[in-house]
Image 1: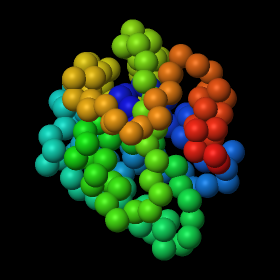
Image 2: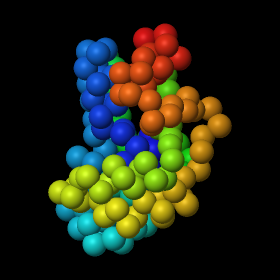
Image 3: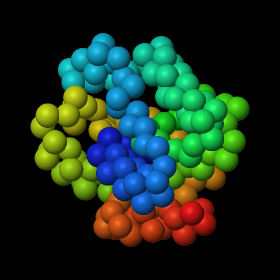
Image 4: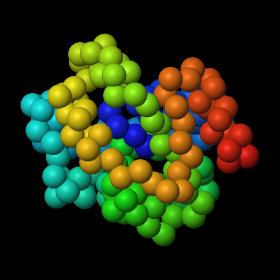
Length: 156
């Protein structure tokens, strides 16, 4: 989890590949309407987010039914969103990719084709409710180091 530009997809894909697990990018679950709002610089409301979170949760339920492990890259900025994602799922661990807002803004300036408008970075930072029980990983570290820290912390 983390704000836009924190490296959720990059780190998540690498972690999933290293472990041979499934990978889900929460961005793939957004409706066209949600993507259009974010592209226009309009922050999503909770009403926009609930169906999106429910779709991700359904994918995770399918993974459990298939006896498959998965990595999910999702902003999950508020505790209520994390609770909705984790409801009834076993063995969920949360990793917060965290870093300097200037680094995040710099990263966003290099992805002009992404639907997420960089102007929304501050609203995500303001919305972030830091989970008390998450592993916090510094985004300034190389991707391989971030993945190793996650693996070491959870013994995977």
